[in-house]
Each structure stands twice: as C-alpha cells, then as structure tokens.
Image (cartoon, rainbow, N blue to C red; front, side):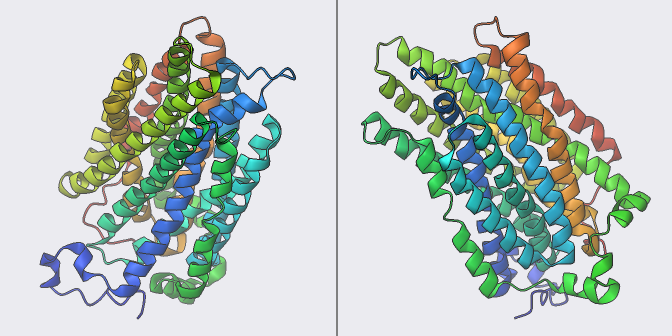
Length: 460
C-alpha cells in the first residue's frame, strides 16, 4: 500500500470522522516506527538526566572513597550536559541533511544504531572525561532522530491528521522518559535493599535495546511519496541544500525564527527543568541524611524520589503536548506558543523557588513539565510546516538542533551560577534556576516574526 495513497482520496465524508480512523495500515506502521525511534531516544535522554548525578558522584570520588560533593556534581554535570547537547546538535544537522539526500528510513536506521551503541558504552565510564565523551557520541545519533522522524510522519499523513499524529509522536516520546523513570525506580529499590552496588551503570546497559527497532525499519519502512517525487523533480544533489535554506529569504527567515524558538525551549528544559532532579537530589539527600540513615539507604530513597519526579514531569508533559495540539487547532500556532512560553516561565520560577518537600514534588513537578514540554509538542507540529519537502528534514533539523547547539551554553551557565555566583546560598541551584528562566522571553520575542501555518498544506 503506497505511503502517500491518502493524499487524493480524502472525501468530504471522511473529514467528519476522527483523524485516526482514516489512516491506512501503512500510515499506522510509519507512525509506530517513528514513534518507537523517538521513544527510545527520549528514554536515553531521561536515563542520562537521572543517572547524571549518581554517576558523577561516583566518578568524582576521591582515592579514599569519599563521594563527590553536590557543587562539583552540578558543575561537571553542566559540562557533560553541554557536550551531550553539542553532539546532539551536530548529529542533528548532519543527519538532517542526510535525511533529505539519502532518505528518511535509511537515515533513521543510522541514528538508532549510533545512539544505542554509544549509550551502552556510557556504562563503562571510569572518569568524568570519558563519561562526557560517550554522551557526546550518543548525542550524535540522538540528534538526527527527531528531524527524520517528524519529516517522515508529516509527509505520509493526510493534512487533517498531520498535527494530531505529530503531537502524539511527541507525547509517546515522553513514554520513553517514563520508562527511564520506571527503570530508575526499580533499580533504586534494588540498591536500597543492597542487592546492587550502583544504579547508573545498569541503566545505560538497558539503553542498548532500541537497536532492535532498526531491524524493523530496514524490513518494513518505505520512503514517502513526497520525498520520492522531490528526488525525481530536483535530483538528490539539490535536496537538503544549505545554499537554498539560507539563500532564499523565506526559508532563511523561517529557519532563524525556529532556531530562536527552539533555543528558548531547549534551554528551559535541559538547563533548568531537568536539573530539578539535581535539586531534588540535593534537598532530599540532606533531609534523609539528617534522619541518621545509612548512605546506601539515603541514595536509594533519593533515587526513588528522582524517579517519581521523572515520571511526573513527563506525565505532565504528555498532557501539555496533547493540550497544545488541541489549543493550536483553535487559536493558531503563534498564540498557542505565546501561552506556552508564558506558562513555562511562570511555572518553572515557581517550582525552583518553592519546592521543598516530597509533597511539593507531587504537584509542582507535573505542572512545570506540562508547561515546558507543551513547547516541544508545538515544535513537532510547527517546524515541518515551515519548509518544502526538499528541505523539510534539513530545515527542521536546523531549527531544533542548531537551536540546541546554542542552548549548550545553558547548562554551563547554570553550573557557573551555581558554583560561583550563588555558591554561598543555602541551595545555590534554586537561585540559579530562577535566574535562568529569563530565557523563555527569547521565545516570546521571536513570535512576531513567525509565520502562521494553521490550516495550510505543507509547502512544496
């Protein structure tokens, strides 16, 4: 069954049906494979966020066995996260171009294999330098997954179903985050029972499993008819052209605006939101230590709450992605982004300033996650709508990944604010996180220059 068979067959009677009931079996297959690829990529991201603090605490241990302190963990955690984001950005740009020139499905296979292999290598880290290096290499593969996946889904789906399918792809990616949280919770309980020595190395071992998805891609996935038509019309050498992307005023403007929007959201999530786990690690570690519990038990209990926080931030994010897909269909892309950036700013400031107890985690973290991750549901819908088929993977990749490359300064800024500017405060990470929230204003300032794409077909 052809990948693009639905383009000309959607009659008026089908327009009244739910979007998902009109999809063909092959369109469901494309959606499932792209969603699995993104789900496992997101699982790796969250494994890193959850394993970062305990891994660095162990890797920074002194020869006498004293674990690294919280300030050092945040400092080097910022550096490792920045390298991860740089790798993610570089890989995203490279594989985004390959997605246009080589094809969506072939490129997807390469990205899945790369991030699975190097994720497993992270478990063998013996120091901070090689730990950061493995994360950089993992990022190379993970960065390309988003652009090729959303480009393929956008091109295969009918116009009416496209925003809904893309929003659900992003939402299902958050299931990968929740899987990582479940793994962390389970391993944390084993550590609390003194059945395993550490949790972070097994977490990275488990991350190798997504390579199996690549086998399914090779056997079943075809290139989209839109992409094949673009190859026939323009030739492969003109697909993914950086000269056209930045030489044509229309596509250049779309790219620059998308990069600014992605920069704000990626910094907000990766340099602030996901460091809420480190804040929980610091606050609860001190709280449980004051109760006189053994160090192994303290680490296990803290790991449990970090896992709970990860589940909640992504559960909230799932609601946010779904809510964005519904709201943007009524009020448009730009107003929906304006609401999301404002909500992300306010909820993140509130959470970092007031979070103190386990009870706070149960409602503050999902609230912040809903507002922050709604932006990423928006990126998934909006970025493919900005570019023609011959530039869709490249343009989407530049928006998301070059914005991510610029965002790599975010974790470094957070670590410097924590270790230098606010180091003498009781909880320096709390104050650093609040200060960093100004980044959401960049997204708001970019919106007047963003085109409105609601109700429009994909450009050709």
